[in-house]
Length: 302
Image 1 (tube, one colour):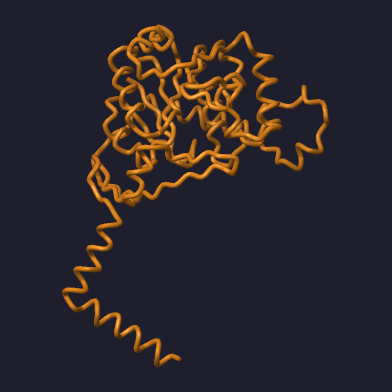
Image 2: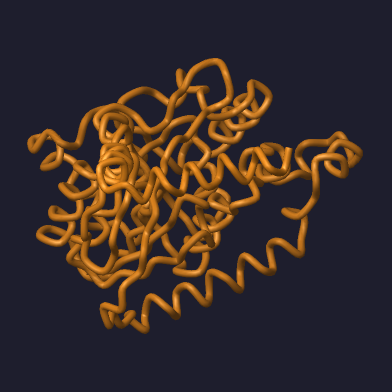
C-alpha cells in the first residue's frame, strides 16, 4: 500500500512539472477565484459570491438562516491612523459591555429557565436568546447607545425588531425611528416564535418611544422627507441588505447632509460585498473587528 501511495504521489508531482498541465491547473484555480486590490487589502473571493451579492447573502426560509461568504483578506500596511474620539467611544462601550456581562445578561438558557417565572423581573435580553448571541452584536449596540448617552436613535433595518429593542433597553434613549421595507409585526425570519412574542410585548410596552417608517430610502424624495430625523439623530445603525450599494449611497448622503456629532454603526463590514464600501467611506472610521458582529462591525463619524 505504501508503495502505491508513493507511486501516485510521484506521478502527480511529475504531471504538475509538465508545463501544459501546470497551466491548466493554474487556470482552473483562477477560474474559481477572483482577486482584486481594495485600498489597503488584497481581496480574494470565490467568483460565485458575485452572483450572491446581486441577490441576498442571507438565504431566509423556514430553515435556520445560512450566511455564505468566502473572503480572504491580506492586510497591507496603509499607515491608517484612527480617530481618538472613536477609540474613546469604543473604550466606554467595552467597559459597559463588560459590566453588563457580569450582571444578568450572562445568564445561560438553563439558568433563565429556572429563574422566577415572573417575566417582569427579566430584561429583554434574558427573554430573547437571539439577543445573547455569542458574537455580542446586540449587546454592542445597546452598550454604545449607553456609552454615547444617545437620546435620538435611527435604526436602519428593523427586521424582527431585535436591534430596536436593544436600543430601547438603554434607558437614556428617548426615541428610536426605525426603517424597513416591511412592518416589524410581519417579520419573524430572524427569531423564534417565543422570542417574537417577547419582542412584541416589549415594543407594546414602549410604544411611545419608537416609530417605524416603511419605505425604500434609496428614493430621493423619501430621503428628503425623513432627512430631518437623521439630522437630529445622535446614533445611526445601518444594518440593511449588506450589498454595499445602499450603504455607499447613504454614506455619501450622511457626509453631505448630516452634522459631525452623529455616530454611525455599520453592520457586516467584513462581508465581501461590503469591503469596497467600507474602504471608500469618506469618514473617520474604526473597524472594531468581531467585537460586535462576527461578520464585522464598524463605527464612524463625519
